[in-house]
Amino acid sequence: MGPLISCDDLPVTSSPQPPNSPSTPSGPGDREHAHDGHGHGPSHGSAHGSAHGHSHSHGHGPAAPVSLHLRKVIAAVLIPFAAAVFVGMVVLWPGGAPSHERTGVGFDRQTQQGKVVALASVDCKSVNAAQVPATGDTSTPSGREATAEQTGACKKATVEVGTGPDKGRTFVEIVQPGAPRQLANGQEVVVAYAPDAPRDLQYSVVDLNRKLPLALLALIFAVAVVVVGRMRGLFALIALVVSFGVLTLFILPAILQGSNPLIVAVVGASAIMLIALYMCHGLTARTSVAVLGTLVSLLLIGLLGSLFIGWAFLSGNTDDNTGLIHGLYPDIDMSGLLLAGVIIGSLGVLDDVTVTQTSAVWELHQADPTMGSRALYRAAIRIGRDHIASVVNTLVLAYAGAALPLLLLFSIANSSMGAVANSELVAEEIVRTLVGSIGLVASVPVTTALAALVVSADRPGAGTAGTAPAAGPVRGGRGRRRKR
Image (cartoon, rainbow, N blue to C red; front, side):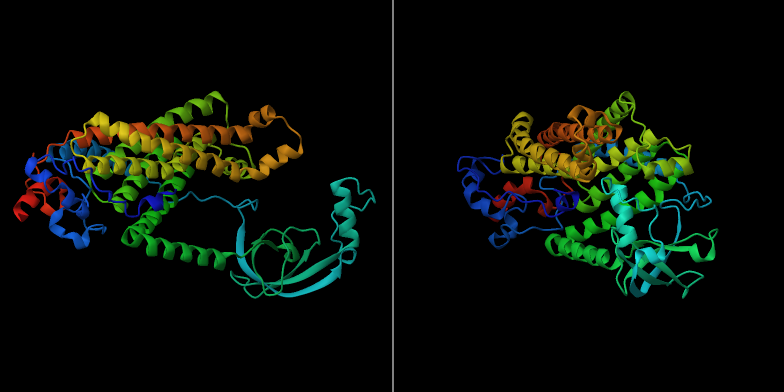
């Protein structure tokens, strides 16, 4: 379950209370109406009437607001934290990514948009498509490829440059029969530009243009989120845009400017956490408890990640992309970049877990306000155990799915499990998965304990005089007495 789903309306406890369980601790007069009050839902109070018994209201605050004293305590913790995050972003603000001279390697190339305007079949041998001489030996992959290139039918594509200073210029691209990327007439493509190369070789096709299907898929996703999540879904999409803004405008440029990746990741992830949670779930005590639980779990993930990345001697420089980054910006701490990725990658699932556990404690307290902190913790942790099992399995499978081609290569090589796990490529994923999973597991008891302590320490009527009656279900007992 992703963080966007957790931004949707949280379920209101709709199961009827036991006949002998009072809906509020006000006195025996309310017990007579406990059964009559369950149809209104504990989060709405009886003043709304039975017609609104199970409806969700976006205007409401948390299911059970805490007293003014506890709100002040929570604010005393979170306001300095939010201020520190803001100051950290101001101090570390990069002002844009540093400029550099393009190398023309990998992603560091000048690219333009293009289109295939003509396509013809030609003999591969006539266009000298083979890069190696055909040996006739087909026992090796290179021999089979060379033979196919000499004897197969290639495609000769005429590509027109659609953007940039050379707009309208055409060039020829030869597509070999075994190439993974085939071209079709009228297809939109991405072309690379090498200004220092001979004129006939300055342009080449490097990828296909996938903007339309990706944009359509994003639109379908946004519509689905808004239709199902309504206003919560809309706020979730806004929070998602803000999160990407923090990532692209602050985290990535700050790391490229030479700031410590761990510090940048902690500050950026904290900003994303504060914005996303409060935007999705409101500026409430319940959300604040989820923020505290997420913060504690992120600190644990940071400490464990730092320890085991260093202990396992993980450099963070394991493929062509990280090698290119290190070559362009040798001052970047690649192991710190790996740790930053672990922290940011764990944040989304952490939000989901902490919000769910906090909501569970609030709803349990609302169903039976007489429960103490220990009883609340025991009841909510049973929900958390089910959540742990599903979330950890999801996280492990997500990382395994991302590394599936790599695991397939190891399987083809008949490597032992020990040899596979010991390689740095796989060891990075193992550390990333296990450190993130430990943080997720720890977030359940930590957040549940915090929520149970906050809710059970609440004293209805203590400093809540200014609270609107509709927002406080704890005042439902007095509301029923006035109704009588």
